[in-house]
Image (tube, rainbow, N blue to C red):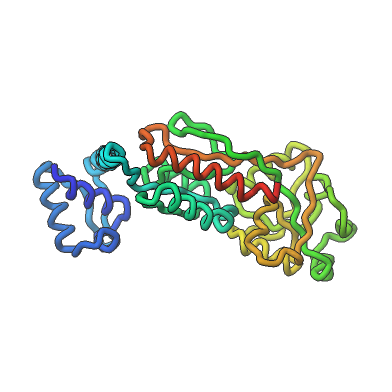
Length: 316
């Protein structure tokens, strides 16, 4: 079995399209199709079901896809270990980052990689927890920074930080719009108030991400535990979208304080601690336990941990 043919097949199966795979691999589509057909002839089975919308793996293709990912990963590991033997840490490391942290750590993380792993190739991918967990299981990501991931035997978890969620509100400049949106009889928190109870938070017009966002699940669970219903006026699955709406006075957000680093000027916002109870979210570094970690990946994990902790320290 030719490794290049196997790589071509895996990429087509993952992308669901010969056209997209040819672009990703930088090869001509006819050549790509020919190599995969030769692989099918050798194995005497159809591996891909071709249709007008693309290509999907057959039952035999699904089996080869599972083995193929493992084989290609082991080849990468072997190449990297040979590089280590000659004194060079190289290879590729793919890391998933949540949107709330991406802007804060992308530059310092890239700088840290160039300083300590100059011959390694790093790929940073921003995404939500569900897609990143899938990426870890499929081998598209080597590691990911996640909030409150579910425990699973095929995932290795390491706690980076326990983060407190805070109430982010519009400043005085946006108060007229906020008062207009408030429920009759609901008191608006006064400027300068440092703490607010979760029960008081539930009475405010909230702008939250939709489920199954990790922050949303945590807020929902804690509100339910104290017997209160959230007043969600808008569901927005985008950090900047949420904060821009808060800035304009449409409601309040419940997020880590460091999410305000996405704005050059944080003056349009007020931040209050939430208590009774506090909303504590665990930030964790996650990798698949089914794949052995290379030396480069081990160093990369430490780099991610160091950079994340330094970046969020001023907001703790």
